[in-house]
Amino acid sequence: MRIRSLGVIDDAVVELSPGFTAVTGETGAGKTMVVTSLGLLLGGRADAALVRIGAEKAVVEGRITVSAGDSVVVRAEEAGAELDDGALLISRTVSAEGRSRAHLGGRSVPVGVLAELADELVAVHGQTDQQGLLKLTRQRQALDRYAGDAVAVPLAKYTEAYRRLRAVSVELDEIVTRARERAQEADMLRYGLDEIAGVEPRAGEDVELAEEAERLGHAEALSSAATAAHAALAGNPEDPEGIDAATLVAGAQRALEAVRSYDPALAALADRIGEIGILLGDVAGELAGYADDLDADPLRLSAVEERRAALTALTRKYGEDVATVITWAEQSAARLTELDGDERIDELTAERDALRAELGGLAQALTDARTDAAERFAAAVTAELASLAMPHARVSFAIRQTEDPEGVEVGGRAVAYGPAGVDEVELLLAPHPGAPPRPIAKGASGGELSRVMLAVEVVFAGTDPVPTYLFDEVDAGVGGKAAVEIGRRLARLAKTAQVVVVTHLPQVAAFADRQLLVEKTNDGSVTRSGVKVLEGEDRVRELSRMLAGQEDSETARAHAEELLATARADA
Image (cartoon, rainbow, N blue to C red; front, top):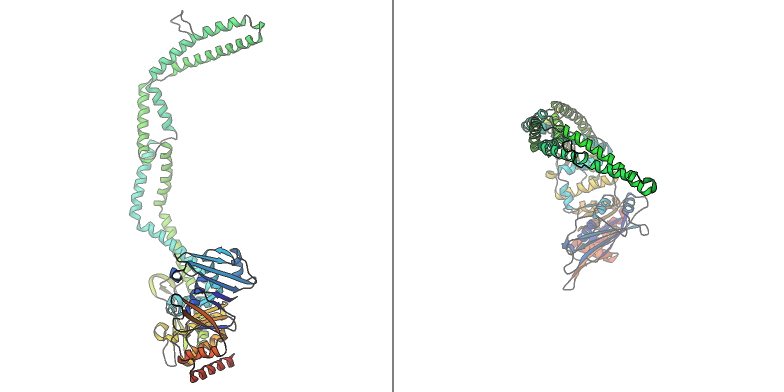
């Protein structure tokens, strides 16, 4: 994969060919627009300040040559992108209000998709990355990246065990440290369960008792009504002259029975009246039984009301009805088992101890893998520094642990541990013979730090390469012979990858396969940046300007031509 072209914020179009491209220009000429634009294309943070005053938006477009089957192509196609003649088109639009939109292969995509592709496409390095290399965490990450699966595999196992240990420890601490609160909660639950157990409520009992209480409270009225209804249907023995419904219906049936044979319709009515008579008899019998069975015992009513009061006391505290109270009791019993579960504490303690022992073993495996990788990594970086005008410099790693009585046991010692293991990794530099190895944060100058970072990146290029490298003034603080060696080393790196360097150093620019000049123009109201490919005489003039600040200086021109000749001889 190669970046073929980049349409950037100031309306310039940068053609980036394979090999080594140097981007130069006077201070403030906008060379970093290449870095900024590429950062936007790769999912970087959008800033409304990038939009020219008075404009509605800024647009960055990139055309990247890819090969079928590349992981980038697979991910892009998953996002709906389509290739254009073997190239992947990426664009990013930033509005004056700060809103951002991204397009990949003609399809609108979330900015996060561009960020996913970034690691596969381009490695961007600037002066801030040099400062990042001073952090111990970054140094450990660099070593782990170099080690590859040798560290990644045990680190994944360690991380999984570490997370489980943290979860177990948190749960165990909660159980132990909240013992008082748990004891209070358990006492409240026991009280409630004892109170409910004393009443022994039964599901639906409250509804049944309410109905019974209603019946018992109106027993006299119910009995009187049932007796009167029975008399109306079946007659009253104490009133032989009274007329009842059964007698009237029977009379009606007899009247029809005498003539039913003359008309089928009338016969049907006679049958229906007969059915009514039977139904009246049944109802009358049930009314008689109801009146006889009706319990008007005031003692039973008192017992029912007392039972209802007991249930009401429970529903007032534990639920809306008896069914809810029973559910509360079931849940509380389960919760009480948890609170009283000393067995759970024992289980968690045993699991924690087992995880700590496992973590110690995995931490030792990580340390061993890092120690082995550190020797090879340091030797490779040291060899690269020899190519960067630091022939006597030596790089090494210090891998150490901090003792901690609360830590995990590794090698017979209790040491502090974290999510990445127990190791503190520090990159050391001895810049010349006789100098003791010192942390690069203390023992390296700005120029030395630039070269160490470049050496580290070159080593990575041999083990975990990316197709394109972008260095933003990575040669800051370097000059003279060291700058020549940096240019030479970047040219060698460009044989296997696309290298783009924003630089102020003519010694570096001379080794580039192609040099781009970024120029700013101002018409009095709008400042624009333009990009020009330098060839022949134009390139000599630019290198002369970079060397002496004078394009037409014969001495500077001679030096520029000498630099170009030296670079061509190394090609």
